[in-house]
Amino acid sequence: MSRVYNFSAGPAVLPEEVLQEAADEMLDYQGTGMSVMEMSHRSKAYDDIIKTAEKDLRDLMNIPDNYKVLFLQGGASQQFAMIPMNLMKNKVADYIVTGQWAKKAWQEASKYGKANKIASSEDKTFSYIPDCSDLPISEDADYVYICENNTIYGTKFKELPNTKGKTLVADVSSCFLSEPVDVTKYGVIYGGVQKNIGPAGVVIVIIREDLITEDVLEGTPTMLQYKTHADAQSLYNTPPAYGIYICGKVFKWLKKMGGLEAMKKHNEEKAKILYDFLDQSKLFKGTVVPKDRSLMNVPFVTGDADMDAKFVKEATEAGFVNLKGHRTVGGMRASIYNAMPTEGVQKLVEFMKKFEEENA
Ligand SMILES: *Cc1c(COP(=O)(O)O)cnc(C)c1O
Image (tube, rainbow, N blue to C red; front, side, top):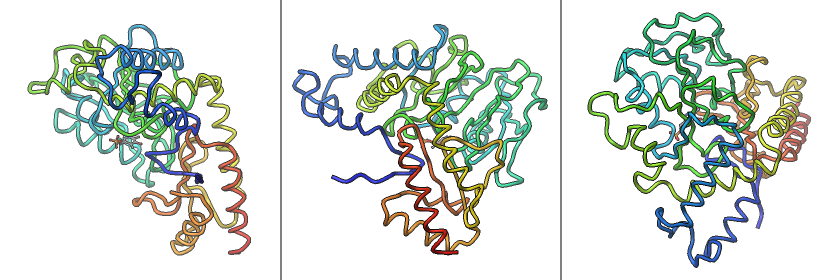
């Protein structure tokens, strides 16, 4: 068996010991004589799995009792519609557009009401986070929406926007559990798990209870109402059962690693190795305004598309895979999520140094 260093933006690297444990339990989960994949979601064994997963996530993020944790399907993209359908009581919401994902969410919300783009960084290819300290928040906005870490562009909100008292809704798909968060500052925190937590097919929604009501937009399907899933503790219908089981294992792994404070420190140290190299390199350069740099997604370029392609090809041959940048940005992107070991980033930087010398 040989494993590569996988810098994919998602689905992405998972902790090796979690994969090993899942492999060990594949045919017989803890004496049940079956795989978790083959198990009823109404069984006692599965009930323990989903309840323990929720409890561990609550511990990790310090989630207050007045927030529900929902394990849903449809990916983060389904939430682009589910959020306005459930939260747009006045049919008005304010969107801060800092990348493709925020833009898609804004466009989707426009189908259901008045979605105002109150700030954007599109003028500079989303390479920075706009000043959000005094935005023209709409008087009757039902919520203010952000994408907290912009997976494609490699920017991160280091400070939450001033919503002037309005409910904050955040897509945290690519920074989920990468550092501590104050849940009380948000109305909704959600993310697809395939970036930093588990296998594709699960989206986790953490939502304040008062936002879960029957008063949703007319025609909202039962499956797209938060209340349906909140009332049934994520077991209204068959949940993405195996995916949730793997997420649960990652939560245990995070607790063992020391929780989110420790993860933040680890992620800062790891990202610094790469950013420090980029800042002194004569060949490679980062594409993001330094103060807004993400700890999770690091885009960089040489400024020459042929050289970029040569780098990606040689890196792949050397076992550093999925470094090609998003098709809308070009260049390279190293996604260095929680499960990417420091060693992986150190070795990548060594490889980049060597490449730079050879191509000077
Ligand atoms: C990947 C990603 C999405 C889309 O996720 P899907 O689960 O594929 O719908 C949305 N937002 C962010 C920030 C992402 O990184």
